[in-house]
Length: 363
Ligand SMILES: [Zn+2]
Image (cartoon, rainbow, N blue to C red; front, side):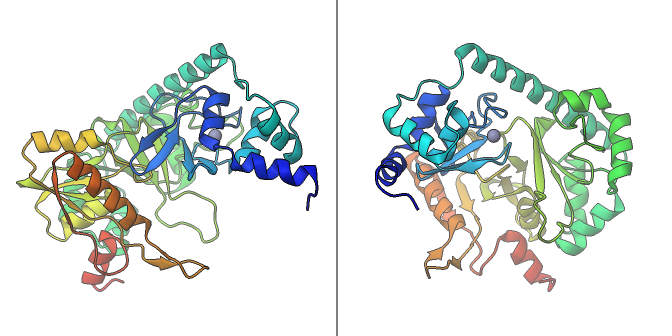
């Protein structure tokens, strides 16, 4: 525990606005994405600036940050330790926040270079998504079919339709086989350009993730594992390409549109018999109001919001329900735009897929 000067300077540093600090140090502007505050630059210099709209860094309550790209996170002190040369200890970092003047950590030239390098990488990722999409028109892996039907409870017609509509694709489930498949379909040089295969790794990042979910025109795709090993840090899905477009299922009823939090929930709603169009948010649950304005212009009269009902109690006995909190925020945004919406979220705990699993007696 620190005493004297140290304690005061820590307290003062932690009271500073993290957003203001990062904006000044990184030369970027934070922005709202759905209910979250995001930035396109990371305090970790090795991760740095990315293309506009990547939103890779999330700021929480102006107090903590988390980068979805390099997985670093922390407080304003941790950010200063990354950003400021000579701030190797928390105390030096705190002093720099309080007494320093937060000079830009990277030169404008270096920032521009990093952004352009990231844009090239994203363009290669879209190209990779398109090659994989074309190759997945040939075959549907039985292991993925079984997973979607038995573990997720989706109807076979919905999975077949999802594949025909270009929402689903599959790769060999085995990592070694997937590596060979990716080398022939995409090419190893191209996978390296796209940042999907690091020099020292035996296989590309996306190998061993046989379920691929594409948004329209493959600008963005998520590569999923079927079964996540317990206690593993492996992410369930890896996002590749340009975020910002949702999954979309065009329905028979043009007047209504269900809004769900993910691709598989969209397909679960379809399996439950929903006949309107359905949005599945891509990535980490963020929306853009332009989607809703666009759909309203095409005749959607009601948006039925079906966010997760996460109802849980934390250690302090406080009830937390981020899904429902976000749904409320979206409802307010839609009302402010003059768009009609209603609540279609699960009445029991869980998401739309849990509703489907209960209905089918799987869960
Ligand atoms: Zn990062």
